[in-house]
Image 1: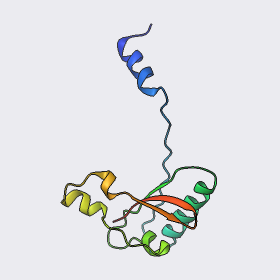
Image 2: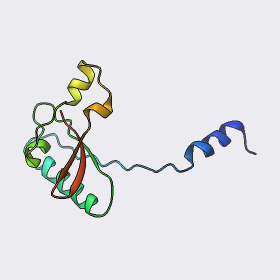
Image 3: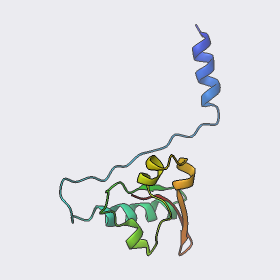
Image 4: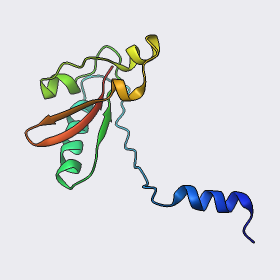
Length: 104
């Protein structure tokens, strides 16, 4: 039996793509989280995947440093200044790789 909610879910899922999430965490600093994250991201981009990195290591994030970038906004700015997430996302092309970054 198809109820109204089931029909709505089916309509919402038409053309929807499932996003995957990979979390790289550790209770200790300096173990290579940023390096692992960036290398996995680069490999996924090389395989044709769209990648977004959220570097939420407040005050100690290194993704921008590894890429030689300086972000205009951070996730902290998003909350303090009530910015839209689209404003905070940095779209960077580096050596023909396109990465989307949200930095702290």
